[in-house]
Amino acid sequence: MLSRTAASLYWMGRYMERAEFTARLIEATLRLDALSARPAGKAAWESALQVVDADCAFAGTERAADPQAVSGYLTLAADNPNSIRSCLDAARNNAKSVRTALTRDVWEAINRAWLGLRGLATTGGYEETLALTAMIRAEARGFEGGLQRMLRNEAYHFVGLGAAIERADNTARLIDVKYHLLLPEGEKVGGVIDRDQWTTILQTVSANTAYRWLYRDGLKPWLVADMLILRSELPRSLAGATETVVGHLAEIAKRLARQGEADRLVRRRQTTLSRTSIDAVFGQGLHEYLEAFLIENAELDRAIGAQFRFA
Image: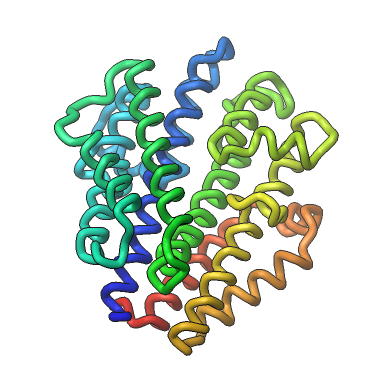
């Protein structure tokens, strides 16, 4: 496989995962903002921007952090490189360059999602925005379903590798923002707003049911953190995403006979996660732990690029 083909597949996986995550984030924030506990509203939209590292860029637009402005910026803004529209543009361009490596189902899911945003100037009101995010999520599921029916070759594994790297990054940012930035000043930990926001976090990663299956206790922030960091049964957890990266790199190594720094880094991470407890994470400092994870994830991304000569 050519290096540029591998790079296009990898980044297609990353951009599609990013688009779906952003759609989930917008939907969950809309629902949180619609709750009766109104003090959470503005903080919830500001935190959504912080999760995707768009708070500074949005501030430059000098617009208020209200639902329509933020959802529009995260969904349609051409000047936001991480908006859903920008991600779908990038995913589609990468897919076009490797069209022969993809099945019809995979290509059509990406193209339908892209077409669904073409020509839109605004996300509309509450119901229209929910419908738009539902469409994006549906096409993302179609994309994932198409991948599952692909031949398990290098193309499949490079797409999955990119998606797993992106998934780990998104989950780490989501947890970090919640713990340090989301609860409005003056509101108590464990109160109604805090509980609603943690429910929103679980909705964002589709883990409400998983939480009830894994834990007998009611909603506890430290148990949510435990699940999203250390429980490999959850595909969107840091441990689950790490196992997925390990698996894809191992399969690529079998086919291309190429291993290197990326394999070493991710196996070290897998070992560390398997030996870590949530008490140890909090003992180190959750923010510090997640910040270190994000730095390591960026290092792993660069190692993958170097190992397979993406540049």
